[in-house]
Image (cartoon, rainbow over all chains, first blue to last red; front, side):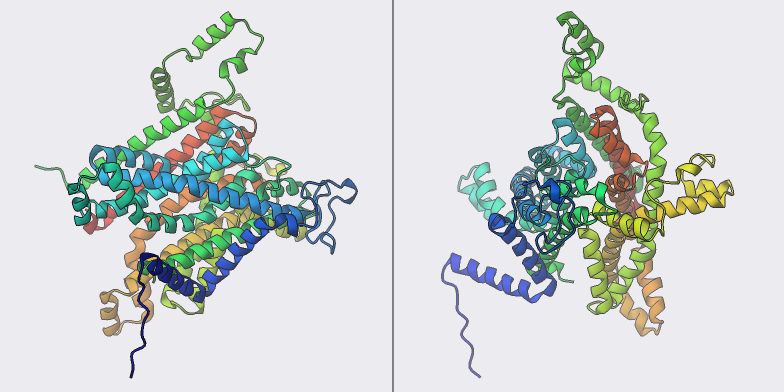
Length: 295
Length: 339
């Protein structure tokens, strides 16, 4: 039997590429993970091409044709102002993606920095930082976000900030746990002997090793961010009318529930599918990337 | 002689919980100061003279340094004084005491649904791991985690109330029966039984079924996933193999040997799950007009009644801290390895 030659990556980039494509192949073989990937790709596609895909202007009112049932012209019917619900769903995908990405971009690096600082320095710095983290973890996310938004005033930006403020502690916990394990590693001692500053050690040597765990945790939290944002929108504390945010669309459709059920049902279904997609993808990624999670 | 280990752990956990509570108060205090509306101007109107404004500011204690203001806030909060609600013109704490039993009843009913269905589902998933019952449990769990609870509630109302008429509509009870039984426990199901009033019991039950099931799907998803994980860990233990070799029935191995060992982590998870239900109840109560703490908070924030919002937030946070403390203490008390 002849051995099959395995191509050995020659550069760091090639190795990273091999790892990524292996992970992708494993993810795609997992049917639930693949379903999640497809749902999220559809969401991104909807958001990216909303102006091309939408049959109508999402904010064009047509009071003669209000509350129409689903038909060939309006696949999901029209709302109380005669706006095409399908077009609004397409543009709403942009808002949902924007919320998820912005919250991730704010909360994950913030949590990561606080976590590695706590884990690396130890002592009273760690105690203080982790105490603060625990305080934020002690609040139910939605309730704290509600209180914050009601204090600073309802808007999409404030809702995003409120969700970010309630989201970072999870990443702090993860990053601290990873850092504590690294704190006394030989390579850290070696860099220290070379005279590296604390900030250089933290940012160049510790942080990169924590990034993957933080990203994994973030992928599991995405669905929760979608649901919290939609919940804030539903309560009137997120994006304001006439924005086609899905939660806000549901809230305005609520009063027509009995006779024109599609006005509230369709945006809710969109929220459900987006959150399901993120959950499936997050689970799939965890099974693929984290052998410890494979049970 | 050193204090027993368990007492040390208790003291440490209590201190941590107290520090967290203090932190909660700092957070709500800061949120209260974030208001873009000047509370003084709101009280005296924008046409008041500078003297009147200064006097009102002094009366409200807003001319003091921030740390003194926080001290006053802290002292009041410890006495349970969260100020007056603008909306109801009642002390916030009295309002909360009035609405809290409704939330507790809803959350408990949801938790019971989660326990009675979710735990056996989790065990089934672990026992038939990788086979169809496991996949079914996993999919139900994924749906429970992903579905927006307010959408599920609205669709439930549409189908089971508006179209089929199987259940009672929004609210805890038909207006006709409001106040028909004396409030003893605060839970209508229990109070109506104590009063022996079956009509009210049936009516309250019809109103509770739908919101409790909506909220219950989440606790079902959560408990089945946790139970499955715990059971898989136990079932792979060597003592399980030993029990099987001894010839014990599979039923006994699963439910007595393995399940007996997950009771402590399970109770921990249930305590923490109660906290999540409190959070889920905010949206569920809004959809079902269920007159509990969640509806109270959302009503208050729509009318910018900040005392009520922050009081409610603090109470929810404090319950969270209490449940966490309880959960933390379970392991050291029941599992000697954790001491």
